[in-house]
Length: 296
Image 1: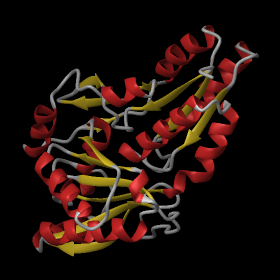
Image 2 (image 1 turned 60 degrees about the vertical axis):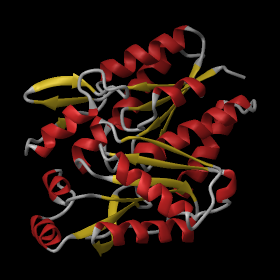
Image 3 (image 1 turned 180 degrees about the horizontal axis):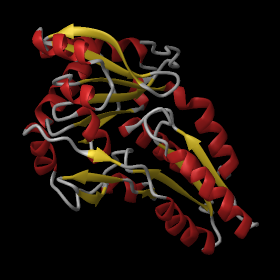
Image 4 (image 1 turned 135 degrees about the vertical axis):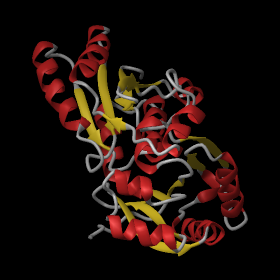
C-alpha cells in the first residue's frame, strides 16, 4: 500500500541513497551564508561540506530559517493532487518551529482537499534520529500499514530513538544559544566536551561532560552499549560535521563493545551543522526510552 507519501525536512540528514531506497521526500529549510540565502539541500547543491564548514571554521556564523509555508504548499499540493495522503515527520519542535507552519498549511489544504489526509508528527529529535523514524515509517508502509497505523507507531516509539553525540568545541553551540557563554569559555579552556542527548521534549541536553576526545568517544560508546536494545537486528546510524575520521573512530569504538547489524555514516547537513559546528559527531540507535528532561 503506497497510498501516502512520507516527508521529512532538511534536518533529517538522509543521503540520496536512503531517500531513494525508502521513497522518502523532504521539505527544505534555508540557510544564510555571507548574507545570501540558500536552499538547505540534503545533497549539498549550493556548497560542499568542506566549503560550508570551512566558512564556520574561519569564524563566520551561518543563520538558518524554518521551512517556508510556500515550500509546504508546493510540495504537499503536488501529492494531494496525485490522490495521496501525507505523513510528515518533522524536526524536533524544541529546535525548529517548522512543524507549526506545517500544521497551519495542512489545515488549509485539508479544507481544499477534503478527501485527503495530512498528518504532521514532531519527531522530538533531529539528524539521523529523525531520518531513522522516516525509514521506519517507510518500512511499515511497505508492510501494508495504513497512514494512521504508521503515525500511531511513530508517536508511540519516537522516544526510543536515542542520540549520543559530542562536539569538537562549545563555541558554535554558544553562538546558537545552546550553552551559556561562561560554560563555553571554561569548557573550551579545559578541553571539556559535553555528551549531547536529545531529551524527552526534543531539546539537545548535555547529559555528561568529559575531558578529551578519546575519553568522550569511549564514554559515548559505553552509553550506547548501556541503552541499546536488540542491536544485532538494527542499523547503527552515525552523522558527522565534516569529520569522517572521528565518525569512523566512534563507529569502531562502539562496535568493539556491541554488535550491530550494520552501520550507516553520513554528513550532518547545513541546518543542524550551523548550530553544532564542524567536528560534531553523533550516533543514533533504538534503545531504552528516553526519560531525561534537561534543565538549566
